[in-house]
Length: 328
Image 1 (cartoon, helix red, strand yellow):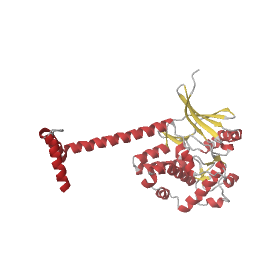
Image 2 (tube, one colour):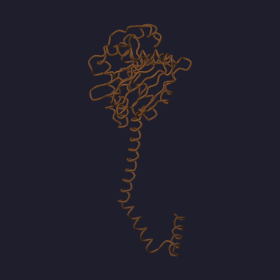
Image 3 (cartoon, one colour):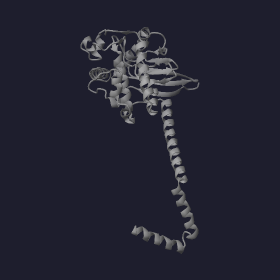
Image 4 (cartoon, one colour):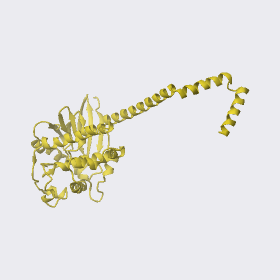
């Protein structure tokens, strides 16, 4: 029997034990699928919730513009998901950044926000639950006043890298973190922007288009951002523990790229090198065509004809030229 090919694997061992799972992508006879496994007995309940959470999410969806991959229970430790082809919003934003296309970059974000507002059933007022208190550190629903509309259930993982685009359809490929209650649509937008910038700031994204500019463009005021930062820090403490609370830079030091993503990055670097060599060759050609370059080449040929290298005549000429250079 032919073995399956492992294409990608990611291990979330930096989380607290109840949330430690493995995500892997496999290929079997030309077909791809995703497996999620509990890495410890404590994480079995979390994995089972991941399967159960698909139903309320589908109930919240409006129309079929956003879809969830089908999931199958293999055993209590393993779930199998259909593999979805497409480009992530994360990848589309990176491409717009690489091509220095600010209009397309902002347009992708605007389309994403419209998707959140239109693909899900939203409510105007928050439904406060114990999860809102324990997971997000909220003391009362008053802390969310004026921040609607709200997603229900509370979906945390609607970030750019978890949404794939295939034509005019979107696919939510990961919905691990879903809680009873509500979250502002703008909180989900904030998290997507914040983590995208954290991942790409080393490549000059912040200098190209500052995060504060993007937040302001999408009506995320500084006070709202501060509130959302505290909510997200509480969520990270829930997942990673308060004494070793999640640090944003650690996530991307451990980030695992898929094989297609690595190939795309390699091809991009190869194209940069090709463009660089083409520019050098273009400069050389321009130099060859210049009057100064042609004069130098002609003078060199005349010197080699009348003062051949290695002869006494050439050495005498070189001594004269050095003395003249000393007086200049």
